[in-house]
Amino acid sequence: MQPEQVWTPEKLKQCTPAEVKALIPELRHRIVDTVSRTGGHLASNLGVVELTVALHRVFDSPRDKLVFDVGHQCYTHKMLTGREGRMDSLRQFGGLAGFPRREESPHDAYGTGHASTALSAGLGLARARDLAGEDYNVVVVVGDGALTGGMCYEALNDAGNSRTRLIAILNDNQMSISPNVGAVARHLTFLRSSVGWLHAKKVVAEALLRLPLIGKPLHDLLQRFKNNIRNFLVRDKFFSAFGFRYLGPVDGHDEAGLERVLRRARRFDEPVLLHVVTTKGKGYAVAESDPSRAHGMPAFDPADGSPRDASSARSFGRQAGLLLTELAKKDERIVAVTAAMTDSTGLGPFGRAFPRRLFDVGIAEEHAVTMAAGMAAGGLRPVVAIYDTFLQRAYDQIVVDVCLQKLPVLFLVDRAALGGDDGPSHHGVFGASFLRHIPNMQVFNPRSVEEMEHMIRWALSQDGPCAIRYPRAENAMMARVPCAGFAPGVWETLEKGGDLCLIATGPLVAEALKAARLLRERGISAGVINASSVKPLDEAALRRLSASGSPYLVIEEGALAGGLGSAVCERCVELGLKPPAQILALPDSFIPQGRHDQLIRLTELDGESIAAQVSSLLVRTA
Image: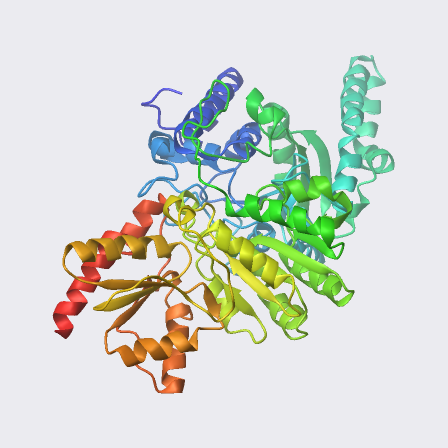
């Protein structure tokens, strides 16, 4: 694509078929080039280039509403709606979001970021249209991986029952992040196997039209009965049972063919499901050969897909998976549960060692948690590994199915920190708040991989639920600070100080140590406590801090409301102790995208900002 080219849906509609055909590889090249420098979702975007082009040539965005499930496949959509010139800022601080954002463009009809939501949102848009007496189209692009999530079926059932006009496009690439699992995936595999029938139908139709006299009548007869013939050979009753008119499967990389079937779908005054078969990573060999690895890529060398900056930091998730694999050799009760993210949560080694004891349930966090509760009730020791931002989808199940029954389910809550370039839908900053207040739940934030390993061993010996929350990678400073052990309700003193004390938890322990060093340079003696046990608290430590007469602060990389600082204040009021002089946490707002170091500076949680705030506090209280 030419750098000065500004694509709009109107300009795209004016292109000739030959120009469209030439544009498609240019779009793919631009995606690979952009993601190689910014990082992002690669394979999913490469798979929907033709589909996105066809959508914008057939429909009239932003009047017609296009909704992308998850939204991680929206890069072509962004380029075709006036944003190609800003693609270099993709997922960067202050730049284009990696997902649709309503505030970014009128063409982003609905903001997304989590899976299995688009059908419900699209149905809502369609009902708003109908109640307003308008007639625009609502088109929802949903991946086959999202169909492992229960919300999709709630929406399908509702839309089909009400016969609300809606076009759902099933982007069937056989993948979510990990390969798809379950009965739905098997059914789609069967439907994909019927693509040959569509080719045969095309050949027969063309042959009939060439026959003199009887050819045209026979062709028309075939057209009238093609749905019945297809139903017999394709067996599409699954979606028809929900009340959707099923079209497909069709080749998702035949742009002209997609335009034809989309125009047909647009004519129906009823819910339609168009089944499109695509290849994840299409057009880039590295992504096609390993779409799981190419799902979310850091910046890479486009020649071979190798990372530009390979990190040497240890992954909390991977180390947790390795430890579980070792522990499971001695304890046959240990099983692992994940929601379509086996490798991303570090459970790959466990699955390879114990394939019958790893349960990937698809994008179905609610089911994962309740199933784990059932496993625990049956005598097993289930370990549920889910990102913090996705675990919030299973809040009710944690409360009623796990904690109310005091079942021994261990939650390994990955990415429990600011999520960086993926933005506000992926920041894992609410876990402490929504887990801490549930009775029977214990919540821990390790400062290092070593401390996490102590926590896992302890938690698997308990008879109740526990949650261990950790960021993606270990801080290099924390890796060098040995951890002697772990006990719930006992905090670790890392440094002593006479002027004040910094109580930090999880990834911000490293920043608290930096702040203490900077304060020492200013002649201020600051102690540092690692409050890895968020629930229960260390009441003995709180009594000592209250009696010392020196001020203390609580520092956490999470929401201010309901977090560690809130817990300390609540307990101090209850016990009649001196509360913290200040709580440094995230504000009551959604934090934008950006590198982790940029975001903690923005929220004044880096070592330099902490030291400055402490100095200001001491001046005010002097």
